[in-house]
Image (cartoon, rainbow, N blue to C red; front, top):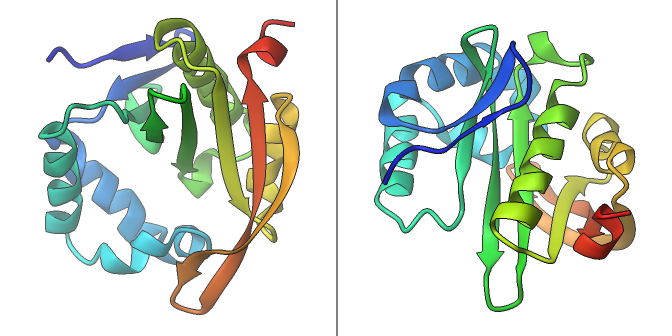
Length: 180
């Protein structure tokens, strides 16, 4: 299967993840472990590049219904964004993402999510996209709000971290609302 790419502008695009990305992705995680680990439970499991290689290898050996993209900004990987828990029968999916701290507050993730929303609705013909965000992670829940997602409520104890369960805010966007 040919790797998918989504171009956003001259400096920013999404490239379907490949095994060659593993070392760069691991190095970002390793150098920003405290920052990323506050909200991403897999960070503490990512102790060497092998974990990242296995994640990518597992992904490449699936049907790729769920798609994972490296975020490329000025020709370097700066994060990950993708679709997960895709359900074609019910035409829905969820967006997950993380971005290097050095590239925060530039609108990059909002642009990446916007491109992924277009891909999900227009290319995959899905009807519903959701984003789940820890209730205390205000940086992250500003993204779905900016993009017109509707807050649906809280998934209590929705994600297990080493410090215990974390409540998640659930945001959704429907195709009919996106078209407006």
